[in-house]
Image (tube, rainbow, N blue to C red):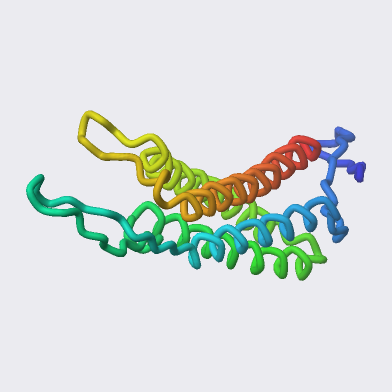
Length: 195
């Protein structure tokens, strides 16, 4: 919206135009869809890894002269700090997505401060999710391939279901982080349009 104003200084008049940015109370439907998608993906990722558990019977041979012993071994997400970080990060992102969805719907007056706070928190969620995905992905890769230099053997050949569930949770969380990233990009484009 353009507003024309006249100012007088020492008998001289000048005209200037001010451009006011009107932040309408219109909700962007794509913004809401991305928030719902981020909420759903991070919720499913957290729950999927949070319930992930597999028990297998593994043969261990302590000494070459003794017969092998069958020992039940359980793989749980709580045993690795990277997976704990992943579950907690996705739970935080899911909770924030629900809160930001409510705040976005409630921000019908177009409060700029609230919009900026939501955008900054969206960016924080991108960083949080991508860092937890990196940590869990590194441990997951170690489980799939092992590391011969430190004598860590593969475990995904034994705990296949557990590892596959971790991989699916990682993929869902990645797309949840991507949804938050798109929200930040949309906010940047909206800011660019205003100026």
